Image (cartoon, rainbow, N blue to C red; front, top):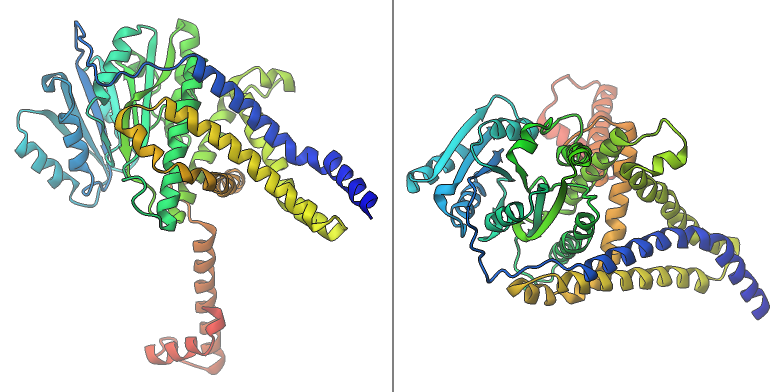
Length: 471
């Protein structure tokens, strides 16, 4: 009996183990490269010391506004409360189709701070790309900084950005770090744990992932919520385009191609921080990740050279992203569905369960290493705050597993549906379909009974109650 167990275990490892270990091997290899590079070349982040720049450049801050009445005032206050001369800051708010009282909020800000150089531009239709481009055309500064209207800046954000550009003439564009605007560790409900996972994900992404991309000059995305450009770089680009749902990534790839010519670079300035509101529901998280994944596919396909052989595609950065990320999606799909099925083929349940536990432990170890390095790169009070939620590491593999499936949905939708900024999650779609089915069935029942075209409301409700399994 023991011989049979070991024989099946060996067969499991040799055959199915390939499908399970291939994605893990890629993730481990990437993690090792990231961690070594970031630890060998740490970023200097002495936030306590404000540098004495001989020349403080004029900075234009562009804020696209769309139904932002609840957050716009805080965003504007964070700009004027910078440790940066106020007479060196220009604020441009661009309204792109707001239907709330965003303009009244801006007017109140202008009344309370009349000496601030600020302006309001109205656009006839919505569209973040259109709003950003309109604002960029109105800039007067040496640098332009884009900030989402539902974000707010750390008090040293603009100064750290200006410092990075002034001290590095080769820097063409940069992204700041994005953090969640939430008190960490105080609450432990389900959505709070999701927020903490999201915060650690951002922490690792900017303090490790994009730090590595900066060092290798392969920055993937200049974050749409907070990024900065030299004036001549952004004006000489095609700026923001609506041809994909990820206009920030599209612009990043476009600028990267230009930096190869003039030998400039892009970077992540993780000491320059913007805070954004956390997602409010799993439905919003689904829509966000689907859009991110779809945008990644659309952009990488635009910039990938697929006309030649396979190895030529791997020579381009976009081609390597497609292979490493989307090709491995099939492997993850395989072990997610087929490994449990092995039990019905006669493999011991303990062996199947051990395989999943082993994968969880491996990814838990990876997340632990990422967390340690990311915290090491953090500074000040934020480092102490993030340490308070160290226990969230145990939930991260599960969080990443679910967001992985959201990304798979983005891959499928990119092949089957037209692009959309917001996407309904499957649960909402199912409920909507059931409600539509219920209405159709009730109508057919009424027709079968010979009811009038315009039924009495009470009769309709009684008929719906007669079929509770439909609701």
